[in-house]
Image (cartoon, rainbow, N blue to C red; front, side):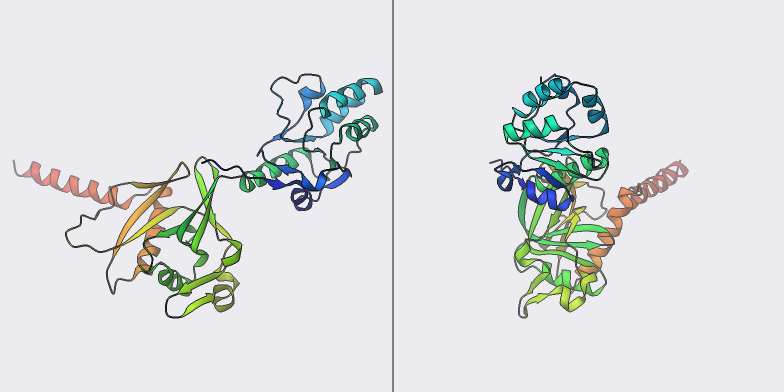
Length: 315
């Protein structure tokens, strides 16, 4: 089932320091459900084909200059038709004053008018970035999310296998915790997911035999982070004799989350194996791969050259 999400207009108004010039009667109940913004240049010129009235609308210097060249009756007619589509809100950038006809028709159609100080392009790009996060598809996974050397590692595995213990060891080594037990994952683009912790359990971690600890208070605020991109998924599994494990690292494994393919590794563990050190090496190796260097591929190439050379000398 595909879930849709929304964000309250009042929250965006507060976050982006927007000022209400005219509030619709349902101002407190308006929710934004579309993660895109429109600049209604064509609509103000009378073209409404393919118009998306569910989007937030932003006008700036270009639109205002065009409208000022029209007569009052023409502006009134344009805003009358424009606001009849019941847009969620119109934002006017650069502290530009709304035209009288705009306010008149906003009152007629019960439309919210907002004013912002920033440039039009800044308001549009910032709002789109925020809406991509607020309205992103999401899923909750049982696991631990830590940031190691700037790489977001999502640790997965059956309950009691040692994910939280490994996270604590990483915290002692200077890395950071994002989420323990439940990881909220959001898809912010076709190539990227990021994770965070539910508000109720943020900064807490559970250790069997000890209980729940507050990481921020015990290790300091430098040991926690509210969110991080998921760069690598680590599947932690018990070691099984006879199981075939990748020893060279040539096989590229991926885990699909919300349609995004994220690199993944399967790490078998046995008692006494230092999982924290292995996770640090996995993070650094993944970072090297993203920068274009693959140690496994280089090693294999050297082996092949060696045997090719030895084979040639034997004849």
